[in-house]
Image (cartoon, rainbow, N blue to C red):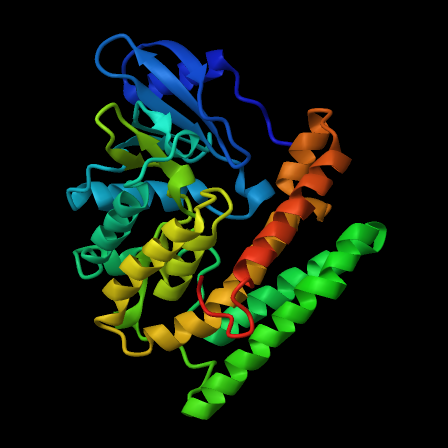
Length: 348
């Protein structure tokens, strides 16, 4: 099933209705695989952002509801580095937000970017006990025990192994590299927990959970003229294990952090969470490589017949084989990076 396109004129009509005032023009901005965004020039006042989400019948997740609730909560807590929500239309799968001018941070990385990212993620943790925080949903693909992370990895691997029957290069990578690495890190996780007398299935206490944007990094940041980073895309926001927040933020291929920057981010965030969670360091050491192999599998999602980005690329007449080859190379590079410190498989 393909997604309906939103034209600029439809964006003008939707935006005018949601804003309650005329929109002069709508311009596609920051297009992505998960949604479509328009910059709306208003008849009076600053520009606004109209964001259109995939229908739940296609995606299965309520991205509009999750993001709107998250940004409403953050705005109520005085966070100004995220867009202010203005109005939404669930039937049209669209919402209106404050517009942020700025250049994507990943285009021209700066020395203090990772510090700004760490500061923002740490600031979110100050809100864990704020009014309304406990009503927030769980983050997308959240995990609250090591066993849940292992289950996610195995489910993703099985799906790609089925798809690999038609792709010899993918099958070779999975069989020779990724699956053996996954088995090794799971074995080490189980051995470490057994030696400590801990249950990998035990759920993480609420007091030790983190507020996480999830699937997040510098690729979600815009740099204003004064160098300040502001952050967009919160459709996966919610509660999660802080180890997943740390790992995902350091590993995410969209940010493509240099090793020193990834290490610095891990250091900053780990210091925050270790202060109140004596089990954090153990979970980080055993789960970081698990999330590493999970991200390798996520990169390879285009091989799955049900992949949204695959459907979009096919509909646009793109070169699917070239896309497969590019994603497989990215997965290989990430796998090498995550496991460069083997045999200890410590966070990089």
